[in-house]
Length: 300
Image (cartoon, rainbow, N blue to C red; front, side):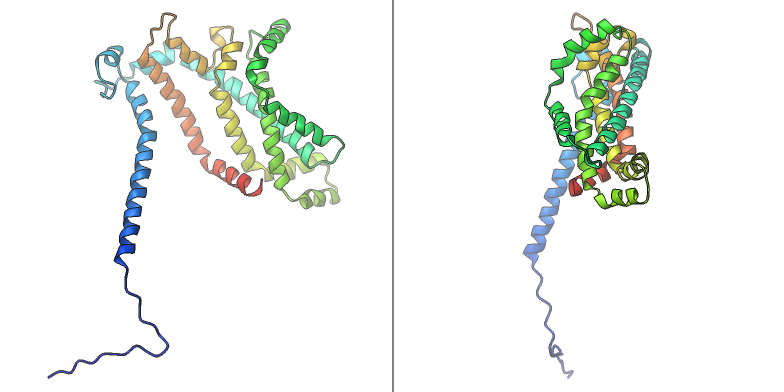
């Protein structure tokens, strides 16, 4: 008859604690609830985009005779062709680029230079100037549209895109200066002092030290201001006096006539083209945006 022996645990060692099935079950259910919640949120975010893209392939008759959730009968590109050619979307996109790019560049160049002068350079009255810039954030843009339009009309700029570029640049400078000043404040002052001791001029310190160290912050702020200018309707609608000068947001209004009739298919197609370009730009620069936001939250 075989003898069964039991090995006693070695001295100084502890037996493994028994597993807790209830804790494991709770952990599993927690993961299930989190996964379900995230999936639901993603579905809520993606459904409007899916509905928008599907609507861009529908005919006018389908919008009125079929349910909202119904899929299009065919996937032709007639609405896209009408939006691009007849609706003038190509011209409107070009105008938006011609307005947005110079406005953002001027905001960044002037805003970063002003932030460098206000935070790094030491001179009397710089705090007062900074408070003046910050006060500009609290001024609603709607208050200055009419006076600006009168000035632009008297100067003779109303038939060009310059009023939009100037207005966007001036209205975006307060926020740009305020944020870039906070980013410059996070950089150790010893870096700029070492550059001054080595004989670097202020211009060299700005371009070779300040700007490279602010690269992620500049990209993040550029994207924020780009989306703000690109998606603006009020200012563009106020200062565009001709159809040839309309930006993409103003051009979308052309798909609705004065009697309230809307061409939904071409309108959805135009919005889809506009949204696709913005999403591609955001996804391409997503890493730089997240890095800039993280640096600002940790150091600003």
